[in-house]
Structures are given as structure tokens and as C-alpha cells.
Image 1: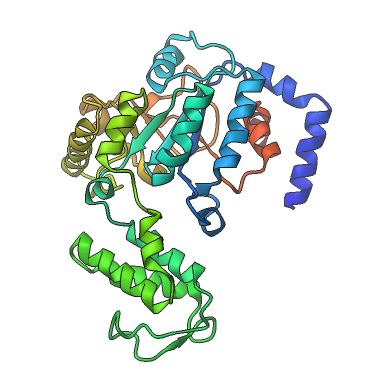
Image 2 (image 1 turned 180 degrees about the horizontal axis):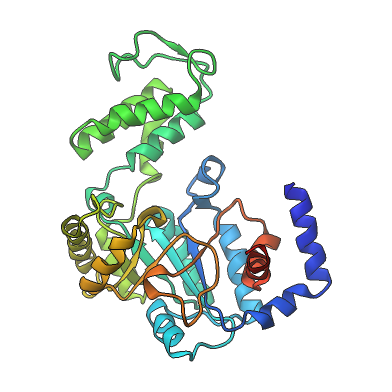
Length: 340
């Protein structure tokens, strides 16, 4: 099915439908969303989440060559509501603040002269330990061991496990995350990851030295902000809380405080963690002074699009060049309209 889809997209481009789509959707604002960039082989582990730096550069080359105007987020939101956007305007955003954002993406955006927004979640940026759930999942994916002894990690593992026989790698990863989440402190959770790496016979020192599954620290954040990177809100613990206004306010207050230390004293734009929100959050965010919020729903944004429900296209290593081009030129937007 995927090969048929790609063939249709290439045919549509050959027939001039991409150029037609660009004209038909020129008043729409395209917001691109990125996450992490590989420091090793993370794009093979989670291609929707991590991208190769070379792939990002290809995207930026296409934007530059095709003449799409790239605007800062705040300006784009104001001009979207005022109806003064340039044709086919684009905003570039990035979620979380993975280490690869600083090592790979930041230099590329400077090279091409594109403004961009980093939505920073700040708990792990402050703690500077690995994001436990992804680190454990990666270890289960990375290890080529057929049998592992995990009894030192938890008494729940009563014997050595034959992976793929006694338990699948996916189920084992889920079990390790469940055990790890019951550990109270970030440093103890980091120690749990280290012991898991040892059990899987993987080099944890290299794993940590290369800063895999680590977020940027606040000093790096300050340098990025000083260079013109727009640092905005993504909550402190990557959650909107328990659904109440009070818990949301607490998450944003902690997030804002850390981002202020990271160089932006007045963050007013939010990215919903994992794209999740409920109707009551919209009223809370208005009361808390949030000017815009981005979702994970695909599509272009028009003058009547609520600023607290902005749509984005989630780009990743799993997206082929022709799929990215079809989205950028608005062809996928027309197809979504036809499906509706």
C-alpha cells in the first residue's frame, strides 16, 4: 500500500498537481514539527521521533530552493489572525529539546537562516539524566543478546529470560519501564538504566557520554536563546496534569521558571505534550495568558483556526522526500479535504 501511495504522489507531482495545490492552499500556514536528531542510531529505533541530520538538511534545502517564506512563530500567529501572511508561509517548531537539537538542528537552521521555535520540557533538562522510558526501550531494541539475566534489577525476574521465547523485547521493555517508574528519584532511575545496560551487555559509558536520550541543559538553552532561537513552553514533566486548572498552572509555572533561567523571560506559546488536551484546557490556557498552542493534528492553519488548536505536520525519518513535498505544497491538504 505504501508503494502505491508513493507512486500516486510522484504521478501527481509529474502532472503538475503539486504546483496547483500550492496555489490553492497559499493562504494556509504550514507548521512543521520535529523532535529528536540521531546522535547514533536512534532513527532506526524510533524513526517517527528521531531523524538523521542529513534528512533535515534535505528538508531545509527544499524550503529554501522552493521559496517558502519561513516566519517566527509569534509573528506568524499575529499575521494569521490579521490575514496578512505571505503566500505559503511556514513555521518550524521542535518539541522536547533532545541533545541532537543542539548538536545537529541548531547549526543547520543557522546555516539556512531559518527562524525556529523550540518547545522545551524542563524536568529532564534540569535533572540531566536520561529519559528513562526511551532509554530502557532502546536497550531492549539495541541488544542482540538472546538470553538476559535481569534478576539484579528486580525480584520479579525469577530466572534468565530467553528473548522472543519467554518474553518479547517489546513486552520486556514495557515491564522494565513499569518497574523503573516506581523508583522515586531521577538519580536512582538513572542507576536502574545503567544496571539494565550492563545486564544487556551494552556499553553504558558510551551510551551516556554521547548523551543519547538526554535533553539539552539550561546553559545550552541560554546560548541558543542568545543566538535568536525562540524557546517556548512544553510543560515541566511533559504532562498537562490531572485535568484541573491548578495542576496545569503548576506545570506551566515550573516550565516557565526554568525557561526563564534558560534565556526567555516571557514564554507565551505552548505545545501540547504528545498533542494531548481536553476542551477545558482551552479556557484554562486563555486565563493563564497563553497566546497559542500547537497540536499533533495534520493540516494547514487559516484565519479561522483557533490559535490554541494550531495544526502541525509531524516530520520524521519515516517520511519520504515525496511525502514531505506533498505536504509542503498542500497536496495532502487537498486530499484531506476530499476525504472529508
